[in-house]
Image (cartoon, rainbow, N blue to C red; front, side):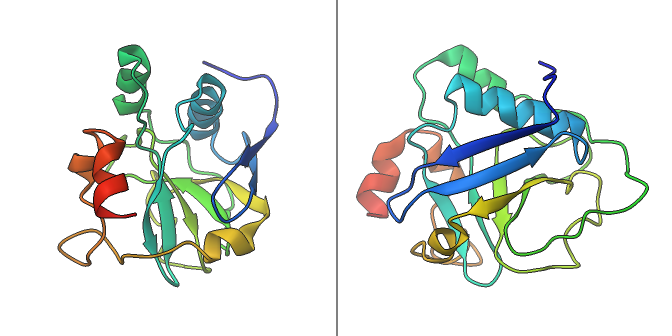
Length: 171
């Protein structure tokens, strides 16, 4: 779904306080359109920030929706965006889709906790926006560390099974 607006503001309520996200279509047209579509459809409602790695990033984007069409939309991939003539730097609060290879972005987003020149080297690591309010709340998220095998955080595959896993194992 293409969106006419060039920027979008999204407020994410968290247990620590609200995060205000500002998304930019010019930075990542495919990423922007996907993110705005998912936010508008409620895909991210009541989801967890399931991967919080201090001094690195926090990640979210696995829905608990009972709507199979919405779940399928979130699992479908979008193409990488064209390379911009100038790179948008990853600074603290930069938002990007998580991806694992060419054209692999689905629904998972991350917020960079710090500037990182290692981010943005691949086309699937394209910033789509930034946190413009409440970033201090994101920095205050509890961390179980990275995902296994690098840490004691949640297993992504189990999160897809429903929120009970997170509620019981990672209160």
